[in-house]
Length: 400
Image 1 (cartoon, rainbow, N blue to C red):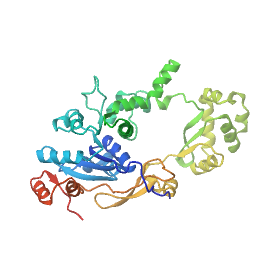
Image 2: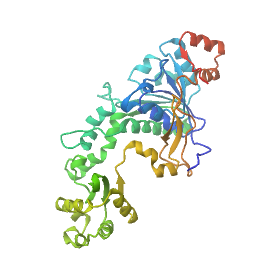
Image 3: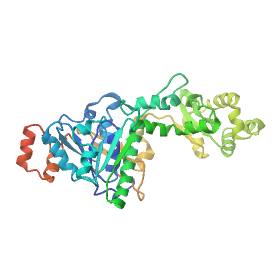
């Protein structure tokens, strides 16, 4: 298991985030995992993400680890004043509300920058400023309008990707922008506004297909019907109906593959001499390979491909990753306690720093768990906090 770094690069950086769902919380999670103190401002009733069911049930515990929770009623002057006191101590403010929401609260970049010129302000939006910026965006919306659903589905059947790719990656770009702004502040002494957006993120994801058209003059085909750059690069159904992804992407790998599976005749066939030859021969070659490999189990194929250094992958459901031997051996899953007290594990950032994975310092917080402590640190007395709590301007968690 990899050690947790003893010193993280963003220790000493304070982030106040007004975020919900996935995009904004991802930005804060990245900064928090890298050492920043991230304070999540929630409404008195709590972030709605805490209560989502179905595909949203994992949002809160995944994207809010290593954070502190302060619950404020921003519709009250007292709640806004408490937020402003916390912002006065911050390096970064992060938000992902609809355009105009933060301005109505007096918490927009222009209002805050007048008081705090060193402040870095990260806005996560559906669209960067322009003709679309009034629209309401969701990950699925931008996948449909940005070409990703078209590329993922079969022809005539657009299909969203199987995870919140734009929300997560958009939040990552927000974090990258914050890092760039921190570096710029070291040089200029001034903060700035950073904007990241779902639509532009999606366009970045499909840019390779845009450039494919620019280079070839031919529209990119959806992935299920594309002409692959490699001849053997597909899912195979094998013995007992199991499935496995197998790839042979070079002439050297083709020779190894044919040797491993007794396909000397195919290796000697001049019609299959090069990868491009095999791409052109897929229509008749692939049925032969599928028939030949169907006699093997997925485990036998995996063992042979691993022995010969050939690319392969089991078809894995997400829950099976909790038992993945590589993730468990390398410390890629960290113990985590859910807000309801149950124990589980959570994937860490997919990077190492000096050989160590940035780990878990704080479990996902209970609602308002840190309200009183952080506001006391900001100058409030216990009597003032009692008054604010009595009039419901704040919520302070009282659990031990």
